Image (cartoon, rainbow, N blue to C red):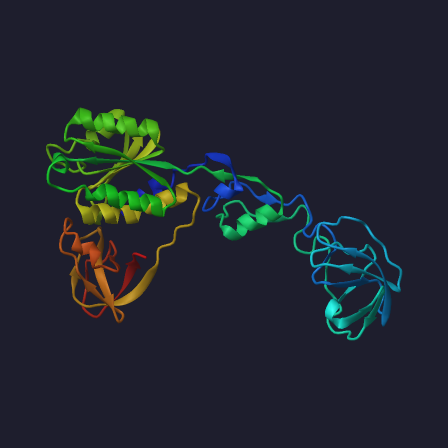
Length: 376
């Protein structure tokens, strides 16, 4: 049996660095596997920000010599008493210094008379937004609707991203073939999705060594990570420790944490495997403590626990060297313990988070300020 910190150090050894190229329209929510560097200047030319007349010098009257609209790529030049009508987004003449808004002028045939010199500006210089060679998005960035727009503006059609790990989920237990509902596979699947991975449910294995073994082999062949529930303690039909030992390697079995002490972690076919307790609360808490941070790391995302301070409403007793995580309800800054047992659904349903009683803390008294790990 090892401490939670020792277990976390073992999990930290693992990584998932497979990459692929995908189209930007399919990239929402994915994580960049390399820097995106612009190979163009944005704007690509000196561009008008308004509808107006591009001029080289300031005068009261100009001669209109041409018109430019968005998409017109001509290189024009103007004399100091000449102007060119330029639409918003249009390319201004090479020697233009200002754009006078249309509403500040009066046009008489090809003569433009300036009636106001307010807002004489309106030119975005080439590369003023993004310069050629500039790192626009850094490796590890999560793609969203804004970054997709920037990529499209740069003319980039495909990007290199980290592959999304597939997580094989296997439930065990003869009782799941009868009246008992398979709760844990649904819970684990939700945790997998929350981390940005793809869950793949591979079914329920009977409490038989070979049936469990075959399911684990299938999961190791089809998926990148394996998660099971049930059959991991020391009962006569708890075969998972034997199966993992037979197919691969157990890296740790049993953690100094309650709920969740029986959890096992190892490798099968060089794929990490989490074997969660069958009790629903224990399974969920193990998923929060170990599985979710692990999967977030595998998807190259940052995981942060939200921990707040709260006043404890009643005494909590732990045990030496164990991390104790007790579901609590929060109200007006007070944490009310509501744990009813490792297999009682409402222990989690009604909770806002977990009271953290650390390994060196044997008890916490009513009125003490404690750390509470929020679920959401």
